[in-house]
Length: 273
Image 1: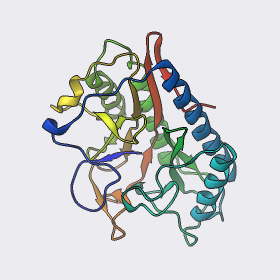
Image 2: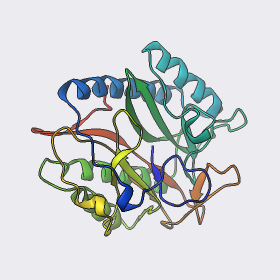
Image 3: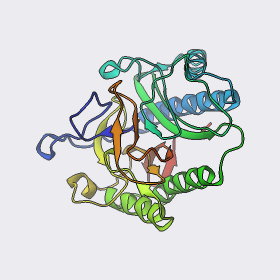
Image 4: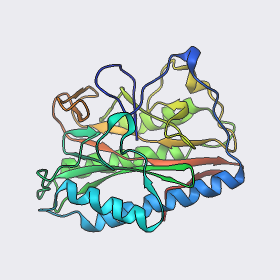
């Protein structure tokens, strides 16, 4: 789940002023093992959702399926009730970027794309991953947007080695996406994760003078890396529900996220089956 840096609306996460930012909390091997288990549950939820996505299904149906699947593994949503968020997962369709609220009246149609953000709490730790899915046959533009956003995620993961810095990850994501002539959203970012859904450091998807960019990647650091990309603009706006964020020009948007542990042997994706 992404970080909202402005004070408008009710964000799922905000950027803290530099002077107030805590130090990153490194995780022990035992803690990373629990987070690995939490990540597997997230992956299983996504697998169930992927199988269920088709025209005629409501986003409410997907939310309930997610809850059912979490319950099978003694996990629960860490989104429900967070800063008042009213659902268990986020379901964002087409021009919706993030924080779309599941609803019985939101019915998937052929040609839609849907970004689903899943976060679980398991044995006191968080697993967090988002993915964008096609609903039936989609347009070539939508296919390319999904490809670029997913590959932008893996471009960042590929440089998430101990000894590099957060800004190296940011640079890799930005370079890949912008070379494909698409737009990295600025207002929303990745983040550290552990016992809390949002921990230090903030992980931008572009290079800036943000001080968290100089955070050294060290074994035991766990981050949620999540590029958010739009076809027409990097700018966004929030709808009247104070949650759903859309592209300002209503062009298509995509969102991919994995939780990653920094290890002595390179980055490990925790949110895999």
